[in-house]
Image (tube, rainbow, N blue to C red; front, top):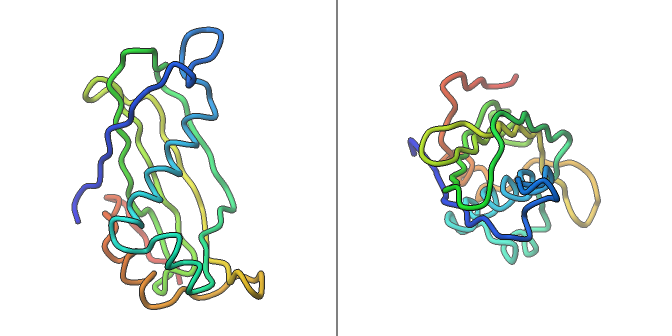
Length: 145
């Protein structure tokens, strides 16, 4: 897959007292984009419960570039930046744009899979590997050894 882009609906409740987007909403949009991607490739929360796995985040960082205001048209993309070959560890990059091509924020996360019974990091099942292999790759994608 070359691109994965979602349009985001900006809500009045997403704004702060300065009438621009609250900082925490950027992180919420990243989570929404990632979960929608997994769902579209049939790795739903129900399936993850059955497989006793779940994604976890070690680090999440947002670099804010241009403020977002009510009425802006927002999109967010998703690209895999680096991963172990079995996708047990990975980094995902989101670019949040407003009104076409203005970069408003860059969100990066580092994550892994947890076995929800043992509460330990683990190797994802084949389905999760298959889904992650469909994720668009960043132009500087790197396999981790």
